[in-house]
Length: 140
Image (cartoon, rainbow, N blue to C red):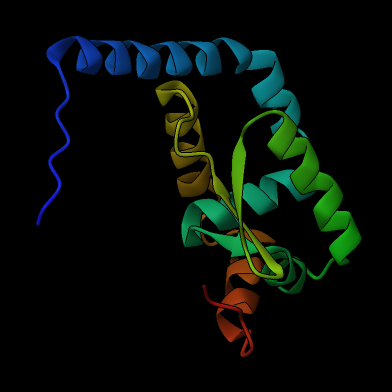
């Protein structure tokens, strides 16, 4: 026997308002100062550009591609997470990071333009090349 879940129009309106409120709260926290301060560090910019290009990545993939230690990458990811520029998810022992899907549109446009601007340039091209050469990448 199949179960039926009935949802009223009022419940849907409340849910939509909750989603809009969450987006508004998120947008208010993402100020231009916070956004550009996070981008002002070369390690964080390289990390974001690689995530922008490749999607969801774990710390070991970022450490390999950027040729930096895992603690250094983790420290910079913590800053990006605090500013809500990246989101994370756990899968067993692995933590995967990605550019936050709810970034305001203006920040998404800035990141897309930045990626186009650094395409083929050092050290971003080398980061991307090392990433593709990594043979033992974890996949969830």
